[in-house]
Image (tube, rainbow, N blue to C red; front, side, top):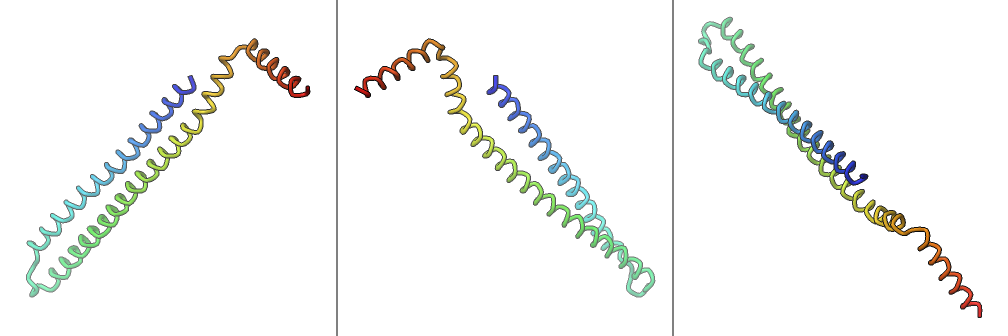
Length: 141
């Protein structure tokens, strides 16, 4: 019964970990899509570059072009953060799994001892006690 509940908890924890990874992956996909859109906007901006002779139009273009570059930089930074976040989540999951396995290994001997003691009936305890008393009496003489 206890083992079954531990298996259920382990499966729930695995589902939670998968949901966390899916969320991080989805965020990464959104950032990659936004990055691709901004890169195409930047390429389009180069094609629409006005002549340097039209100073006012060129300055306006330069401002918009720089804004797109800045947004690309922000998105790239967010992508790096998302990759780091995914890496950290994976490390934390590995540590959680290791701790859980150690806990399971540590609890197994106690569970086996509990099962052994429960399986031994009261008559066996009486028999063992009689043997101990007999051994003690023999030791006295």
